Image: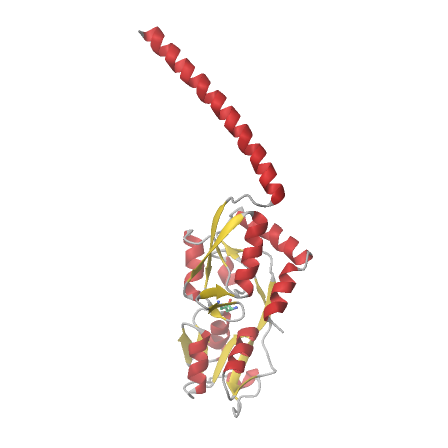
Length: 256
Ligand code: ARG
């Protein structure tokens, strides 16, 4: 009886290892082939964003479009991932990435030392500066003039940080559009926000202007959970897509 059991067990083991050997070999070959043709789908990557930031990410015809979704799509195609975009409040993105709810965050997000305490950043894919939007007839002419003024920002942004250094009278909105609306209604004196979204807001609203006096340059990058291998993968893709001109082409499509 014992002998029979042992025989059966041995047979099962042999079968299993032969099967595994065969299928593992198969998989490997397939992967190499797929990799060459870039069709292998390794899995899904969830991108956390805040689609209220034209031209980087915004909603058009019920779809999330813009520079970041297009670059993310190009990166995922290169690496063999399927991209899923999760829209949320800007100040939830880092938490989502930290907790693993999202694989990466991409939202016109500036690299800062403060954020680096919670997440890693890839290499930068583009840059910006914070600018000041005021009404055309405003007495605010340079960045010195925002001192102690009633300022509007999007909550948790670098604009929020700059405003906080200059005034204690700040309105923090969930998105830039609400801040700009408050400015047009005379509820606040100025909005501090990234250059390209500022240009869009000024285009879309009468009677506003952007001051020539801007703040220091900032780098946009993708944030990833700390110590994740994904950061290196994303960096490889960013490098290739920078070198072959894909990223510049996408940016130029949205920024004239
Ligand atoms: N660049 C600024 C920051 O990182 C603002 C980004 C806001 N992005 C957005 N999708 N709402 O703080």
